[in-house]
Length: 245
Image (cartoon, rainbow, N blue to C red; front, side):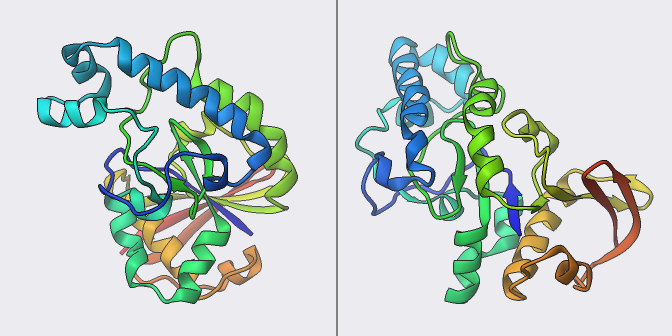
């Protein structure tokens, strides 16, 4: 069973690993495709003024704009699962997990970066800024990654996939053949977005803690704070309606 997870717009700074290169990524046979987007991004950033970059990044503080104006070519990297921060990643608390639990995440989680495309949790990435939905010249990154990575993902992810992404990231990859579990989180009778991010992180943490390898194992797992209210099935997708206590 593999797990799909959305990234976060906010990142942790720093890193100690080598800069952007083929060795840093899974699916090395598709590195040239990642590089194509990377170089388009680099050229676009160089072409914009600070004011234009402020708008493109969605950042008002000019010191931060200047930081992300710098080329990523030589920037140090760290694991993607440690690079991203935010609500879901705070809930995962990757740094507090045992080595076995971290290895579970490293080996089973796939993230979807606006800049780098589908990446494994232990792929090494720099601190970068790419606002969701921002456009690069002459390329739609969502469609580009969908067109160039779908077949390889279909061939390598296996027959059971837990999709913990926000719906937006289906533009990068839509599971067609495998069986899928996805979740909707309800509190006080309403669908919630902020809490959904938190509980996606909670669910992933519990998967790692319990070394869950299949849907059948997951369906027997009790997660504190959540109760299964309903199961909705359509084609290959099983949506679990989870009630937040």
